[in-house]
Image (cartoon, rainbow, N blue to C red; front, top):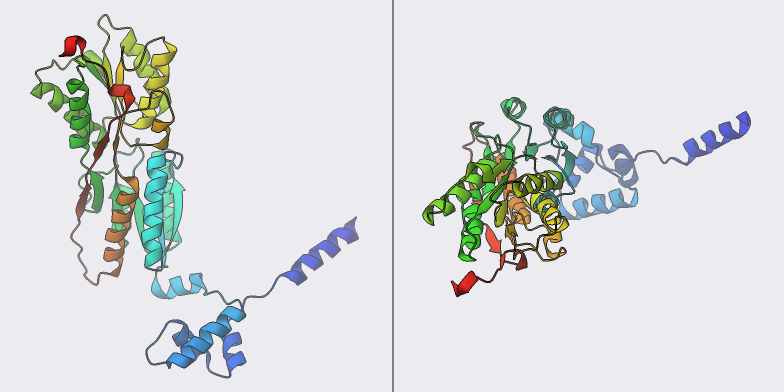
Length: 359
């Protein structure tokens, strides 16, 4: 058995092809390694014919640039780090798609990590990316993140940071957000226009700006229509289905149960949607409901969920555009930019109820 294992090891080692180097290409063409390097980097001093010949030879020899060596020389790579709370949420996967597509256009690749809504893991991810010499970082913070010192430390090293969707105030970094206030206002106003008058809100963690802005938009719509804002109708929790279901259980125990719910995001709305039906209530005749994000699942459940599209792909593209501009900037001080992406209310059956008495 020992000899067989040894033979397997020898076979494996012998079949690994050694890395092609600049010197290998130079020897093949009878030119210097420095000329090869300049040709591969499109140096204008090298003739076009030579550049093409070098690139063709490099491809035939399966040459890959040494990213580590290049990063040591340039102090960064052509890589962008992306940190998101989770990947399964369609909004974040769409945003990552937008980031990757825009980065690819400029010759950058991305590495993605998720915090799993955990602050310590987010800090570890950020530090790891700096160790890998990323050119910049795009992040959406975990719901437990209240301190942005890890992003400030990165920024002080001269590495650009752009936050999107879930952002922290006062960091002095660029950010891409949607108008959460308007999106929440429009969603709540729609419920009012449909004849609902006892509208509850299942909100998110109060440390997140998106939670605060969506709560404020909800309240403003009620005020404008002279509808009482009832504290027992406002429940704040996490951003997942479980807390949507828990919120509904609490609301249904109230002496005067709500006739509609505006949820802070689609996962919470879906959890609430399932629990409402499980408890034997009809949507929207007994309880109307709206979400926020426009996840694909909102069209798969019955009745389909009214929601607010926050255009994750566009947000990702915008974040990448800003970061790439900051990476290429030759200015020692960069003025942070805030870009706002407009939301769109997507009306579906979960909120369309015939008004009583035709009113």
